[in-house]
Length: 365
Image 1 (tube, rainbow, N blue to C red):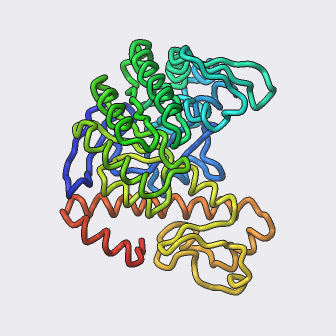
Image 2 (image 1 turned 180 degrees about the vertical axis):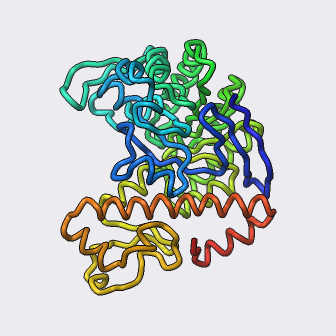
């Protein structure tokens, strides 16, 4: 049910297909983030139109509101949010890191205060899996402890817990129509990353993720850790680098053998009047765009760029009209979907190296 096929390789870069109960996922792929079972500012129909085929939802937030039991009673996330394609849920481990001031971590799990009402809650590896079973996503994640990239002793403890929790998650996972992925940790320490990658690989999950990166380390450290880990993780399983979403970062990661990505970046930028383009981000509130008849990205085929000018988008952003966020989010997600599709074609043709050189000179989707 979750067979992964590598169809072509070009250097370390791979093009493949992951079969899931709700459809095939062509890799490399980028998944928009729908934290609350909704990708902010866009509808499921609009996501389909821009080519998105996998959505990520957040276990921690859905556990707190509306509650995983309710979502299960409503038929799971697919029925609840009316999304027919594959869904991935994270485990809540990243929220343990990002909301660190309001939680206490021990070897058994995490106790935290709800950001909604201040009530005390607890999540263990077993409960994380139970929550994700109710949510019903196609791909679910093992509960892990993400740590700051620096500080060896802290990363050693976080890695040890991540490994112990991965085994407990695997033992607790009983659903046959959900693929459980393990997560590699270890900060920026090569020996810890290698140890973690070997340990997670030996647990034989259907897929493996790289966590704890893009959290404050340098680009050089990000690429070094990514390359080290992908060289150890099994080639027959999909590799998922969590939390990465800029075009340049995606290209560099695919070149190092990563297959799957997610990030809030394209939607967050869209809500903050910023557009992704082939040459960087555009602040659409700039006065220079007030009479600019060009689309956000010349040659882009998205609904935003084929129907509206920069002048109109700027007007919407200055007037704080919701449609401005919607149009920019459509554009940003479309641009990343086109980027992934072009990389896939280049890998299939054995032309990824020259494509990457073209990208570095100024990519146009």
